[in-house]
Image (tube, rainbow, N blue to C red; front, side, top):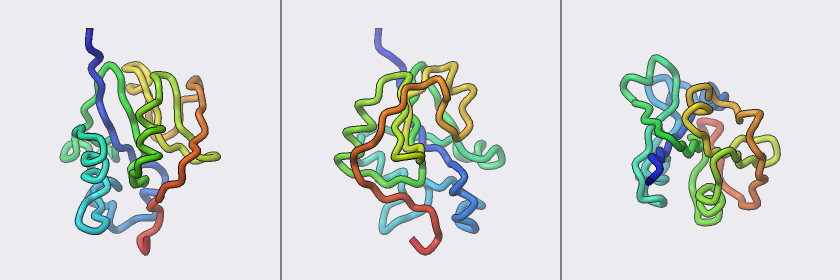
Amino acid sequence: MAVNKSFILFDDYQRDHLLPFTHTRPVAEIRIGILTIREKWEKWTGQPFSHKTQDYLQEKFALVSGDENLVINGCVTPNRQLLDEVMQLRCGEVLMKDSFFVAGCLDKTAMERFSDLPPKDHVVVQAKSEFRNISRTWQ
């Protein structure tokens, strides 16, 4: 039986540092060059992404979750090495870069409880790759 897997970009505390851009959109909808962060992830993965964002934005930027959910920090831009690490996550694992929450693979129950912090009961995998994290407007 095929697993219903969803790809989700989430906003974390850095969203507030990106105001006013993030007042009307999730972080991953910020345009960096010609593409938004979401569009970059979609090009790299070939998968559609939804958003886990502020409640007042959630109606316009819908969250589509499944039995298995790959959540990725919306501030992070993709590259080949990071994509490989993210795609290798198994359900119940989170990818961290030191104390920074990069991504996680959450089952349906964990997704229902998810805010923007790594679930405490998940196995931590440390990221080896370098990546760009957009955390300020001048970036």
